[in-house]
Amino acid sequence: MLRAIDHAGIAVTDLEAAVAFYRDVLGMALVHRETLPEQGVRAALLDVGESHVELLEPLDADGGVARFLARRGPGLHHLAYRVDDIDAVLASLSAAGTRLIDAAPRAGIRGSRVAFLHPSATAGVLTELVAPADHH
Amino acid sequence: MLRAIDHAGIAVTDLEAAVAFYRDVLGMALVHRETLPEQGVRAALLDVGESHVELLEPLDADGGVARFLARRGPGLHHLAYRVDDIDAVLASLSAAGTRLIDAAPRAGIRGSRVAFLHPSATAGVLTELVAPADHH
Image (cartoon, rainbow over all chains, first blue to last red; front, side, top):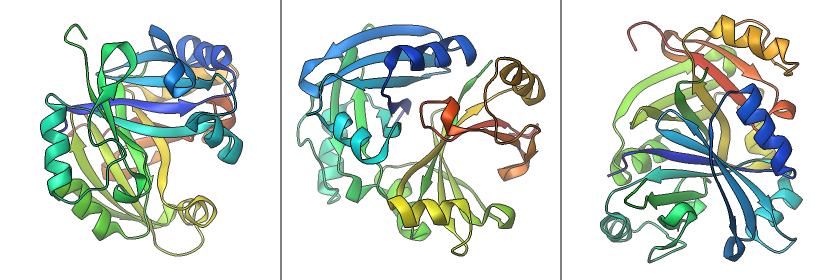
């Protein structure tokens, strides 16, 4: 059902400082940058094996990542799994009684379709499903 | 330098309930269980792609995972990267001025050698390096 860890999402206060560490010190390739206004973040994706690290800096004080930073400080924000058929996975989880944030997929980074599971279902982990765009 | 996300470590209050969800609902294969007294946890590893989810339940109220749970509740605890030559990676990070928790590797789960980086170096993420045992 889940093919891989697609990415670990990390909330940061200074995107450029975080990119510099993950790219230059840990040696991950920086492969994508995107501003996601509807999620209130600027994001950077770095490659590690078949997965990514997704660094997220808030655009303002209003979004979920901004609230996370205000409450907990920088750190691990969510964990995302790669799936092929996101509609089928959501239907299966829903049938199993899993509490979802998104009953249907919405637009994610780099042309993907994504949906979030509620942390109450997953031992406290904000969990994302990602169906990548065909060319990724 | 880093080959893959080796695992995401998740702090839980009820290991069997968490195993049941990740195995039976998310469909991950349960591949290993181990009690790690020196880290104060019972652990379960589940496969997802080339990575694992590592579920961690405290043995008592004293260890780092127990303190994390008391402060934050269940959720993402650390992120681990797989490396080949952990001594070389630690030497490289140390030369770059990266703050380490473990200057030298110590014994980890399933016969691995592991070392932790300090969260202050990594945008708040408790970060582990894992050199798997030869047979994993």
